[in-house]
Image (cartoon, rainbow, N blue to C red; front, side):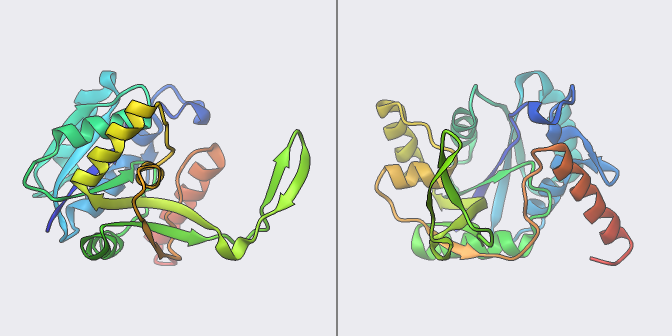
Length: 231
């Protein structure tokens, strides 16, 4: 049961302050998005790659996909106004022969083929699965600058990607969200809203999302360590 990989690369990355989208910035001699494309191209459980890119950057995304998707079939489609709309565009363009869909943030460059295959196989068995990381910090709920409560971190997990589920379930979740005007921050939140169970596979990998300049500097430092054989 192979999965369609949807690489969510439709955002502008405005928080980084660069003129071009963050997924096209250089990371170790290739664009950030290339790291994810190469990982998914080597994953056994992935049958195709669908890249969702900004409308005015489709040609660049096509160029990168041709170079970094290996032998995997791929498509490049325009994103929407929100991440949710962008992923829906990717879903609509995916091959009907694929029963699963694996959605991944293009700004998470350090995902590995083994992690992709593992979470896909979990979704095959259980229906929907996401990668997650345990929360080590003490988390406070705050209102107007005042702490209102301290959350039990033993029950907290940071949601990562890929997030994998049956394609028909995610399509149904998108339809319900659109009908109700619900906006989720990831695929799991849409599935949860639609009443579906999502399981979590805990990982300790460096699968963080590049959002800020500090994140970008950290990613470049990790790449340098990889090149030097220290990571």
